[in-house]
Length: 215
Image (cartoon, rainbow, N blue to C red; front, top):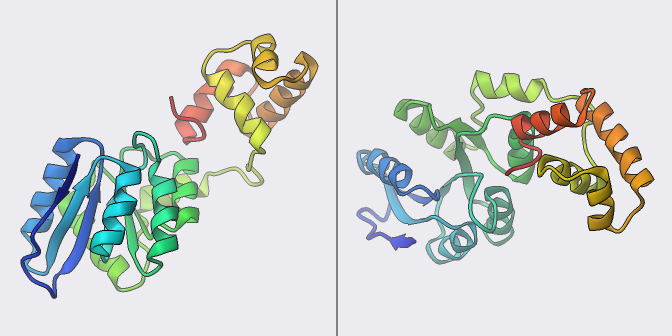
């Protein structure tokens, strides 16, 4: 669903809402509507549509969820930044895994707010990024600080990890990726070391908790 809004005040801060849950967008819109110096210029449930809406309305700030159908929030941030580098991004999400946070900030997010936060914290985040500063709550900073050093995974390691999370055996992974079972076992051992776990089940749990893989 894509919605456009009539701008009440041309001088108001222009905000685009991107979230695949209508009730969340409704709540965000209500918070913004209560601010005399802010206005919602559009809303969508789709990352791909957010790129088009951003190009059309040129928002000052985009409130972006991370888990979206099709194009993810991280991918949408990158795409919008290519077209509109001055746009500021506030991630509003339920996910606080260190990899989720790292990827969002690497993509260009300027603030990271959890959906359990108060409306005051959300508004503070918006006003902070408009001043050209970052807004990272203490709980988010703590999660990011816990990210293991040198924890970047290669594309192949990510493919293997995603298939582990989806319950495939080493033999099934080998067939799916067109590699030998021995190569899969080697990648699995590397992944266990990266994730600091001792078996495949723990690796799957860690991958989901940290935001490395999404179901």
